[in-house]
Amino acid sequence: MSRSEGWDAASTAGERYVAQGLGGSDDAPTVAIAGQTTAAGSSPRRHGGKTMGSLILTGGVAVFFVAVVGLLLTGHDSIMPSTDSDEQLSLAGALLPVAAGLLLVRLVPPRATGLAPEVVGDRAGLIRETAVVASVAVLMPLILFVLVAAGTSRDIVQGVWALGKPVFFLLLPWFAFRAFRAARDISKPHRVQHWWWPRQWWRWLAPIPALLIFGYLSLVGPFSGALPNSADYPDPVVLVIGATVTVFTANICEEVFYRVMLQTRLEALFGRWPGIVLGALLFALLHLPTHGQSSAALTGLPLTLGAIVAFQGTYAVFAGYLWARYRNVWVLVAAHSIVNTFPLLLM
Image (cartoon, rainbow, N blue to C red; front, top):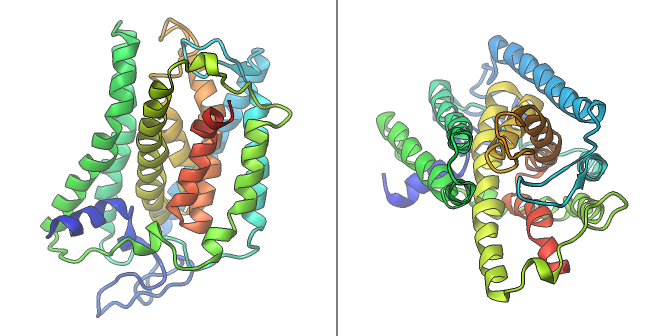
């Protein structure tokens, strides 16, 4: 397998499992009907997969409900974006942009078919790859949180958390997928052109209304938080370097890993909304080491969990639905940039 083929194998996030005839063996032709069937006469999600998907969706929705209601009942209708921040973010300011964005994603266009992921052959291989990605999504933040709780400098943990993402989110899955596919003698994984640069015009234009309303309500809406000012970033060089690193490590690496790699595989196994919700909760978990709501990591753990689910988790539901409807990674980067990078441009 060549280097380029190995990279394609990792970064397509289940290209092998995506509809519209992008795969399948010659003797088991792919049937691309919105992810409902794969090889002729077979179903991509067997009864067990559907049952598990229902359990994941029910449990995931319950977690979001408990997080939001728990914050409100305990008087935490706003939270700190990180442990060392004095800024307060409103819960309404987090939920309103997501709700409006989800509505517009659903309405524009009214119907979008042919983009649902599906298993086109090696379901066991799909499960192995999903297990690798999910394990990284769970273990990385938990290990860093344990280090924080043990007294490790938060600056060190923050540095590993930010700069380690290219390794954990890109290189590690790439090597794992390449090894799996070499073991199964798959020499030509599908390429990524359709995902990195979609050919259908509507996959570029249709997301614009949702991005605009999400951006407006997040940045300057009635419940949005205060924008940063020049006093927060006195050195323009530091600002440029920080923004550039953030664009790559967060806006790109996180979206490629959590939506393109992880969510696509979860959708293929369990269905669209179970995949979105579970992927969103794992994305929320990523912020456990760095978005603590108390200087004491363990004491503030319940509040921190509620906050990251209600804030980062709900954003991830919006981003996940963008991915499920449009399969355009640059739309995800734009959405992430709205909350991570655009505020710096408006200060």
